[in-house]
Amino acid sequence: MPARLAALLLLCLPWCAVAAEPARPHTAGPRVSVFAPPLRMPASLSARRLRVYLPPGYEAGNRRYPVLYMFDGQNLFDDATSYAGEWGVDESMDALAREAGLSAIVVGIDHGNAQRIHELIPYANPRFLPNAGAAFVDDVVHAIKPFIDANYRTLPDRAHTAVLGSSLGGLSADYAIHRHPEVFSKAGVFSPSYWVSDEPFAIAARNRLPADARIYLFMGGREGAEAVSGVEHMARILRMHPGAADVHVRIVPDAEHNEAAWREAFPHAVRWLFQDAARDHDAGPAGPDSR
View (cartoon, rainbow, N blue to C red):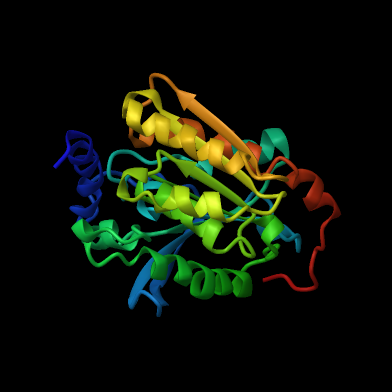
């Protein structure tokens, strides 16, 4: 096995080994709720717990909000459930609402522990069979999103729907916006595991994303020259199309492949992806109900 692949596997596999929550205090804020029981996902024949962040003021009005769907929900809000420290997503979103007028619902989708490496690989790779990532993303689109739209005050159109993930989750976010551009107009692709397959590059070369699509590519410089060049190569492919999608690349030289790097990158990415959110909220439909 190539040294680069072996190193990446070591980074991915510990998430899969978490069978129970560690004895650490819970740090999720009051606007984060855990939906129980886990939601059935028929395409991948599984069920997943959802962790939903609601923005400040949600309970007091009837305003509708953009939605950001994120993989590895255990790592986003709560140190007690995270593998190696939480992302602080709720704190970052609170700050963006306060400082930039950017408010959105965030839906964290839990990974399946030992199943994570299978459910977040959407391409053929015989080393990690079964490759169930395509079915998992289909469940996000056809099971999770309809549930969220039915139970929360969302702006359900593609212009207000985004997906974001890191590592294998970054690979799945990349896949999601290419597989379902009619659903997602924005993707945050953090430290994507492009080592899994060359297919993401081939798909990006064959299929032009809509011109209004926005892709935020992040990589840490200490993740290796191959990882950095992969992200830069993807950006070149995305930009080569006439009327290309808007692509932002951020390489942080001292950042590593870990939650600390993604925590720092998260508010930058969300601010860029949803830079028109405050204006859209002011002008958008409020909706007649108060779910």
